[in-house]
Length: 227
Image (cartoon, rainbow, N blue to C red; front, side, top):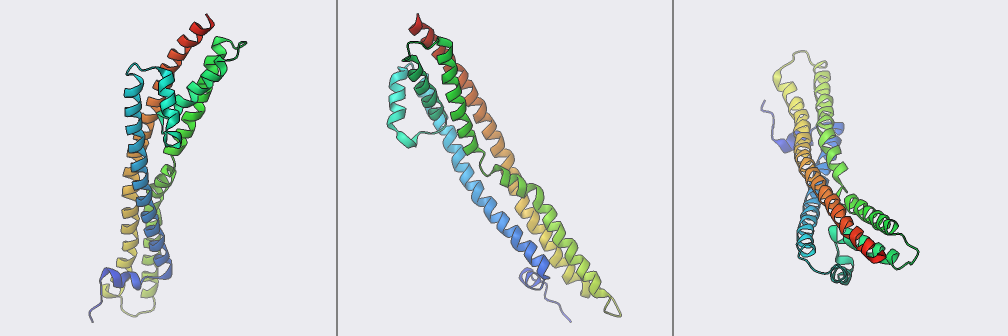
């Protein structure tokens, strides 16, 4: 007797638990790829925005003019622009106060930049934890489906007088499909997580460097104004 061994037939005839595992892994894979494309666009946009703003910032233009240009963009600002806008806005607000000390003005601007940077990093890190979870757990979920399927196959052998490979092969094959789907879901998620985590960390370092350099400029302006 010839046994149907096509992938679709094996999936259809798998036990309910194994089918649920497969469905869960497929959903995790679909969500992972959705977040991967979204994160790729987000990180690419943040890198382009940082490159463009740094060129404009270090071109020697007046900070007030740059601030007005950033404000004119409204909600379309992104990444480093938001950090600059928050810092300069707080700096300008505190500098108007006659009783303000230069160092207090600087510290206020630095706090505003740290808050803005934290918000930007929170947006960049969104969904990274999901990719890490899928990458680390999918192989084990698939392995659970495999173990369950193989266990059912061997239990079925107890009901026959003569065990043959043709009896146990379909059950083992359908169980191994769960492991394959688990690896299919995990590998792209792990690769994407490592890549995006590296890009996000590099952006965070760029934001830190810019905040320090901008703070130095604001410090000079603050003491010149008080002087």
